[in-house]
Image (cartoon, rainbow, N blue to C red; front, side, top):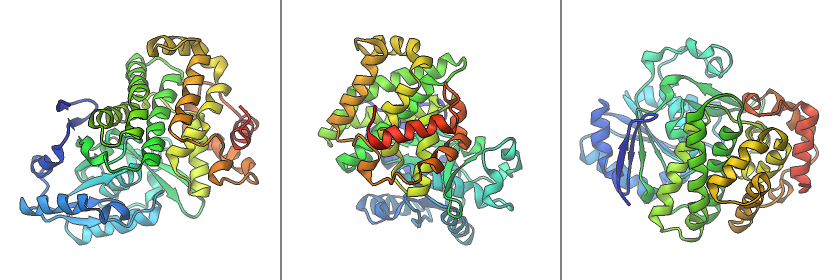
Length: 384
């Protein structure tokens, strides 16, 4: 597999083994004391010890912060920002899955702010409250191929008091460098490879489905979907396949680039389901996917006929839907929310929260509470 450098949407350093260049990247950004933000599981992994050792050998005063929940909460951000300030750090290396990347980016922002975190929720022009010059430089290194947070301008943080997932946004949350090394994803278990890969697919599908004129996002999304089609099952079945792992990393980054156009009902439901039940975001999107696609059918059927042709599928919309169902089955994704322990006694609450979720605005059909309740009920029962 070839290595490559890109400058879209940020500086992307792609290729196997390129994590060994991390110290040089820190120097490029003027970092001498980076805070490495990761999750507790990775912090205990030899991979992190190797990275820290390489950085220390290069003369960098690196410290590790790993107090991050699978769905990071505001307290994680506050503690991380305090660790940054206490250590006199001058940059953030965010390493891990979407939770660690989101948390690392928001910590890099909050370390230099004097307003509370929720003042920067992505509502209206709240982002203009940020002291932009106080945002520390960020290098993002994904170890999963799903969220694409390494090329995103936001972080999703849960308000532990309300169980709501909040989007914290600022243009400078875009990492200065995204380091995509497929070797760092090789140890990911098959189940997480499957769930995170379906998250990447959901980003590309929802971006492609979103209304509005954005041919560049559409083109990126379609190619991202093709990469998932040709590589996800291989990555699940052959965990050491570097080419498949690398192509899934790129599909993930492409999804997060494309969804600047918009997301939709998958995420509008996945966010409250994850916030209330602390469930895995990628798995939620994977389960919700066919139910949302079918609910959106009348609005997306024509464009899905074009997508089917590009993917080499017969049957237009039905062909794409059947491919999604077949892929889910092949990689072990459950068919219902009940299968992963989501209770059915508060679906009305989830539907009400979905209407208010920022992702709802990108859906091609503006579902009301009744519409969202029907979708989530079907997804809970398996009534496709």
